[in-house]
Image: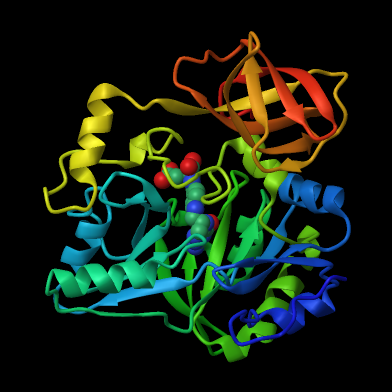
Length: 367
Ligand code: THG
């Protein structure tokens, strides 16, 4: 197993011992923390997510906590989505943008109290941004990273697993709704969320020293449902059209290009960062769009992470961002950022290291 050299800049997840014991074989670095990415059998891990229940260490989804009298104001300044009617106990998927309307993160925002929010962030330093904006606008808030470590239970059987631990009330939670509770003395937040379209929950552990205990309790409760270890799954997320910030986006991507327009409210207050730029882009239309790409049947099973040219009629129209082999579709599929004029269904050519392959553009999601 390739190991990351230990150093204080790359943090270990509090679930480290549990995932080691479960046989983790690879990790990536996300928010400067190790995130498990595999346990040695990608296909079994995929089918567990599609048909059963999977347990993911996603402690790297760190929480940027905004607390204090101006917390709600700062949240609205940072997020171009109307938060005025967001109730306590509800999360919202938000497209954080810079002043030019460029996407800088796509966190789940959780409203814990009228004056306390978490931004459950994707891979980028948002505490830095939030503190700078708060200081420049002279807001009365405290911004820090609390000891909170999400553990995801995903898959069609996740609800049964989580209900067996916490009770049937979890079945009533709508997407991104959450509740603070305890499990055998462990404080946590239970939320209906997770980076898959197979359904599931996230348990935000509020005390990292209890990580192994929590992992083991979920594994035990999940035993009858065939639960097993897994990790955020590239194949499922591409089939389902979920965005991977930093993978599908670059330093110029705006939310409209990557299908996040439905999470942007153009009528938020004028002091929301990026809103003027977003209104302009919404008027003239984005220049690129995210579409699926499916390689022809003859193309090899490919996993290609990175930007490979996509051509139509010999002209370069954009790049792929990630290609994977889909076990359900039995094709190599992927995501691409292409000219806004490109049409789903049309033929393209994708230039990979292994050669040039024919394919077609597809509407997202694939499934
Ligand atoms: N859970 C938590 N934090 C996270 C993630 C998570 N932080 C990083 C990253 N994932 C954030 N990105 C996403 C991307 C998509 C979704 C959730 C988090 C998602 N999207 C659905 C969609 O786009 O169809 C639903 C959105 C909606 O209907 O509001 O679920 O996974 N804690």
